[in-house]
Image (cartoon, rainbow, N blue to C red; front, side):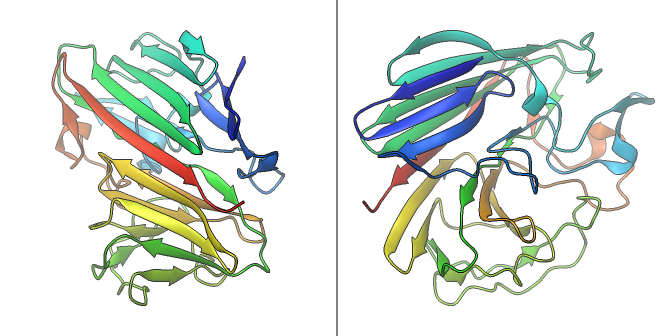
Length: 282
């Protein structure tokens, strides 16, 4: 099911499969990547893992449970709780007996709201089980970018901390690299992103802007996400800005899930994350 929301300046379409934003238009101009052959998604939610785990299994209480890259939420069916012309609210309830086999129950709600030229999405993750929930959450929107167009990513604050990369298996590597920013700005190039996601692991900023030669394109403000990844598929006309609550498992990580550094949500507790996209320009 596709849910359309809009006002006189902005429109959005959310697919109930994965509660995925699949269109964001400003005055009939599409801002999202339209899921071409290079990458068949638009803006998936990453949960309950970010990246991949070793051998595509998690280990818990001596047992092994399969889990796919970036988790199963992006391919799960959400239920529409309520909708209005400019907003919609969806919910996923996961139970360990579901086909995914993930051994921890949880609920994930997504609340989408348009106001003028802004789209805000709020993610609410709730531990509906009786033991601590180890779960990560990220958002992976892809924005259209013509490769011959100069594009800068401008950070709210200086980012002098080291950056990280993932390997070909989408596991976090052990190496750390100097920040590639000049001042608060990062010039996006095919060469910079040819080695996979560029990860800011100790982020100072909570707002970033995409700026073209014609001026600001859009800004993204996020809350609850201490990390940001920038990624594109080589040769494709998009760039992804990915706020993450946690980092992928490191290469070679094969410990019990409970001993892997990750967020833990206590039974009955909820945590809220949000992203706000503001559209600039014409």
